[in-house]
Image 1 (spheres, rainbow, N blue to C red):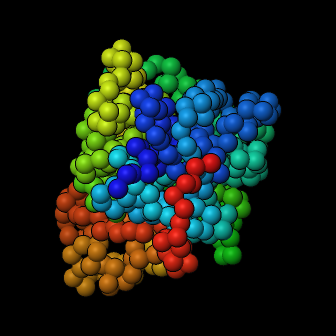
Image 2: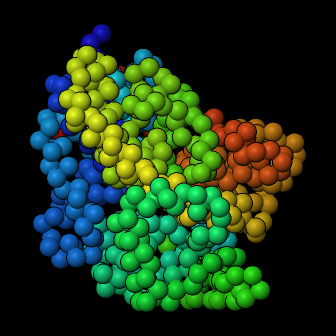
Length: 469
């Protein structure tokens, strides 16, 4: 049976678009499936539309507009793209199930590239489930999607995206009630050891320092924050926390009806895990990564990983990774090789962008209390409404791992398939059994990785394969 496409790419962010551009240069037929209304991913969300609005250029920043040329090249590449396409299964050999406009369809390819990107690490703090609490990424999406935001919000967390979004909010004219920085700063040998390599990107370091200086000058800023509680009944009403070091810690309480949380980002691995790809624990980033070679080839023949889906390194590295993976797929399918000069340029760019990552991973490590919450009343599994006390009680009944835990308390059984509770449950189990976290397995994920209705499944047999548009 002839495959529907040579290459199907899941995700139209930086890595997905770059992969498509390079694969098309070898005249491969390419289909890109993305669940958003337009391409660009989270980093360059709505960049085509926003490029027409000059007032947005001031607060979205130069790095955002760097994606405009890539999106133009992608549109001119000849790739087919389908938006609002929800991929929920990959079966072998290289068959992909997707829902488009309520119709489930099955497509085949000679190669599949997963460019599913990343999502924000869940931040299970007391009250994080209250209305009015969002992630910093969601706060940034408001800016990119509609130039909107929330006045008087409190930002809680740390990391490059955290500081960037606060700066964008200031540039857009929003007031900020407080910035609660949970970062640890230069207080460990591992962080200092990573600094020399980070100095190869002085511009990025200067940019981060300038964001931080401005935030300190223009907002109520609190450093070394811990013991965070989000208070409220029907919605969030205030943020309570301690700040400072050692015996000098002070308690604070900031009223606000909007709180934005952030503790870094992690690869979106639900689809790759459910597809049977091998994964390994990344000690520095404290999350699971797919096992793949330097070209993006995974443990399953014909499936490749590009960009942050294979490990967090940022947009610049994702673009370079996408070009490298696209070239590898083209070589595997056609024996055509990309010009060595161009390929080496992408490899050097990827190395350059990755050089800063070890320092960022150490410098902005997630707050320990967000990995294992201290308050037993903290919601752990939001889909099932389970508190830490309920999960730890189930663990104490002799549960050996996360998959057995599902039978005891349903943690991880909800529609998010463990995205919001998986890492916390893994940490709780490892802590209970006094086991290194990398030795504690993750949930065994099975398709469909996104909710699918009976009507969608019933339509599978009559779906039309010509879905480009």
